Image (cartoon, rainbow, N blue to C red; front, side, top):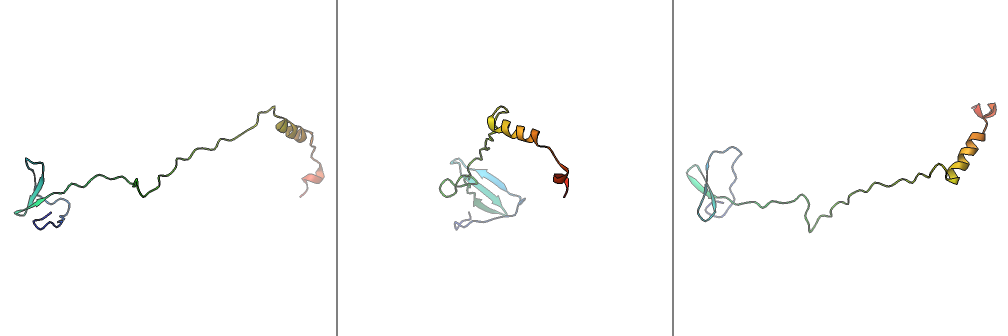
Length: 91
């Protein structure tokens, strides 16, 4: 902040001197001008008040019946007893 309370920005790499006063204020001196530094508070990517936190995706548990289950047993027996004929093989 300059003497009028306006923000002043310099390019990255501008040479200057950072001074910490006894009352813990930070000052920056460059080109024979002294500016007061303003601390920017840390922030999160998502706001607690406005953004909805994405829900963690829970993997869906697949239900595979046991090999002795009647439903699987019946399908297996149908498949085993099914005989392929030449009529079925023709396109």
